[in-house]
Length: 180
Image (cartoon, rainbow, N blue to C red; front, side, top):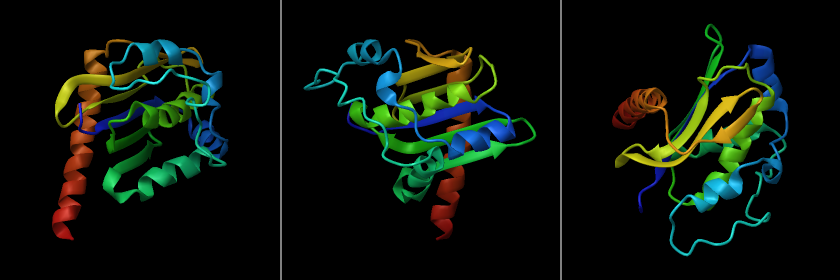
């Protein structure tokens, strides 16, 4: 596959915990479980062996800086929206990447929210081919009991929610492009 995939996360988190997450440093990716199994389950050309050096973490001092990095990358069409009423954070990168190595630090950072979020099994993060091949999934994380784990097959309801939210945001970005 040669076209970039999209990233979307829906996380239930109380306002004070959300603020703590934003201020905290990025999670240490190599200390998280499941990476090798996820890596070996993916087909890619010239796949390197997944070493600790490839399990890199962003070099920012806070999660807020990581989010800001993506929000400033105008060609990525990224968004970060916290709904205080429903205590839900939506974070997405519509034009993300096709490179599995570039997925690792984003997935590692989002997995770090497990220490802060509410125990809500409907929370997830997904990387998939939103534009070209919606059934092609690069990564799917579910959050359970203070941890995150890679899951091989996406829940259809999660995929539907991701698709609806990304579509809503894409239309908003497209509208702004036309107005510029």
